[in-house]
Image (cartoon, rainbow over all chains, first blue to last red; front, side, top):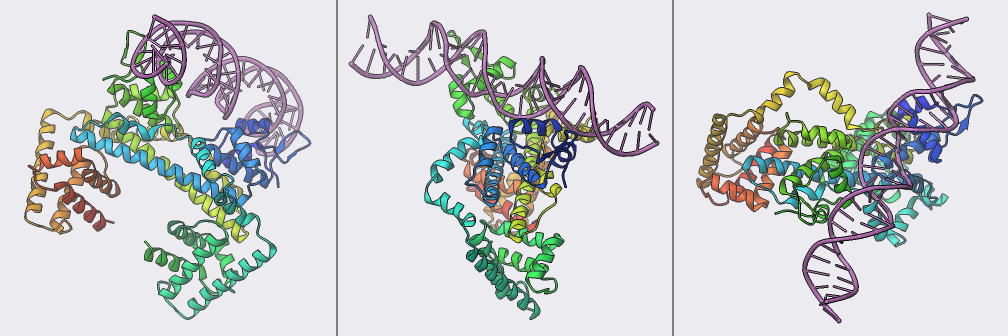
Length: 255
Length: 255
DNA sequence: CCTTGACCCTCACGTACCGTCATGGTTTAG
DNA sequence: CTAAACCATGACGGTACGTGAGGGTCAAGG
């Protein structure tokens, strides 16, 4: 299945012109050219476009985006982790700006004049490059970054086997707990939820409690995830719903 | 007191070149030119710069920023309200992007392939203009917008007198409650906090519970606000701390 | 007194990221 | 078979600055 420029543009909410520009830059080359000269985008191209748009939204210039995306040291999981970190950062700074605006509002009602630096400092250039350069400084080449990177990209077949075995055991426990009629907010069920969270953190990506909650919801709301979990739990009924409840209870416990 | 370009640039976290550019555009004219030709920025200029940077951060082109800022129908309070709304919106969409990234992460670990539109649709152009145009459509000229605008900009001297009287009464009640040794999380104290919140909403700006919490913290953390409240409460001791506790209790109650 | 370095000034050209025609072929609905 | 709706490739324009070039200003130190 291939998509035309117009289709991709509509899907992504960008203009056709932008896609053509990315093509010119070599940033996003459509998979094929049809006989009539039309651009034919593949699903891989779409995935690449997701990365492009995400990094661009975060303020990176396109050549930097190209460098980031084409970096051979970075695998897909690493990209998602990085996007997650960058988005979280951005949200944090926007929250600081929002907080400053609230302070300004209240200062006005009270007739208090704030210092210039209090009004300004958070609104400056949130250029991700500066922060990223700093991150590069902190992490670049050192162990932390490399280790975080090594995690998924260098798993051996044996590792994957162990991971799957761990996961299967965990899901079997969930199925058993559910079958026993154990309440999802019982300590045992919550422990299983915690184990699930740490499983994700050990093998894949950092997963704080709010994020874990979101995943619990995802498992119930998206039938594909529901089905996948059911399969892993040997068709235990409503296992996703059970997991979600346990995950939320566990998150509450650790709030 | 006037500031040089370099000082302002450092305060705001932007380049000197950018400030000169804003000068050229007529977007931010320094208050004065010193004898030596240096730009001299006043505190008002700094306040204007805060608006410029905020709207620019939100993605508005500079000429639009100029139009927004120079719009004579918009008073300072209205600007802050608008900035608050726009920032909140932006945070909301970034959160949607973050949530999508989390879904993508989990989809990878489960080996599920998402539909193209699921990967892309949130990352498109978050151009505030589109949304703003829509808001203009919804509100433009109609009552809601005008009314929201009329609120502070058209208060008469009598209105201000009533507002100040209301506020004085409220603070007197807080002082009394505190003097009586009434617990800040008692119903009566929480009612006062709620009254304070509604006072803000009626006279100044929308103030949801999370924001109200933030203000409570501000009252304690910033001595200028602490002092101001103490004065309004006839020097009742620790009134800001008392208010903060009541505000948080009230927010908990309405969570 | 004179220099050095950190500021400031005004042109002026360059660059990134597209928007916007202009011109023309292709495909699909009626 | 024709109009509308796509696709293509140039090519020029526009915004928001970056980046010198070339040259005054000012405080501190030798």
